[in-house]
Amino acid sequence: IFPKPTTEFRLPSSLSTPLVLIGPGTGIAPFLGFLQHRRAQLVANQKAKHNLEEGTWRGSFEIENQASTSSNNNSSVIDSPVVDVYFGCRNEDHDYLFRSELESYQKEGHIRNLHTAFSRS
Image (cartoon, rainbow, N blue to C red; front, side, top):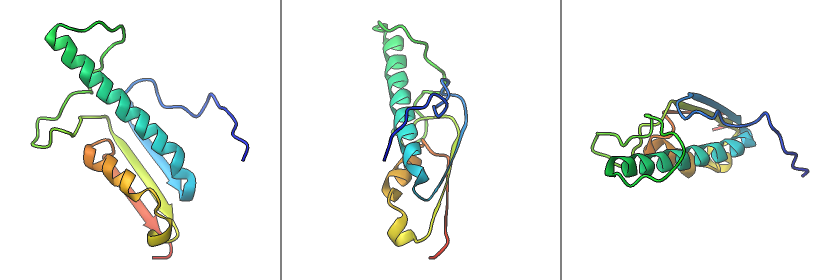
């Protein structure tokens, strides 16, 4: 394996930009990093927004309106921008290695739609 840095394969700078992530087979791994990064950004913005409301903010970055806590009963769900994930592999039982991670992101509200397909179920 020869990792090669790239300047083109990056998340959009704005949290409000919708994402469509398509990861056939093992191609889903880089998108897990994107989802992790997006979740960390939303949580940081949520904390900063809370500090601003309390009058204790000392930061220097802008807070986007997208990072607010949902008003429904599940307070852990964050109103994040639209993220749709398409994932496919051969066998659901053997090849769906990141099932728990993807389902967790969906439950937390970081993935709106998780589409899966398996060619040999």
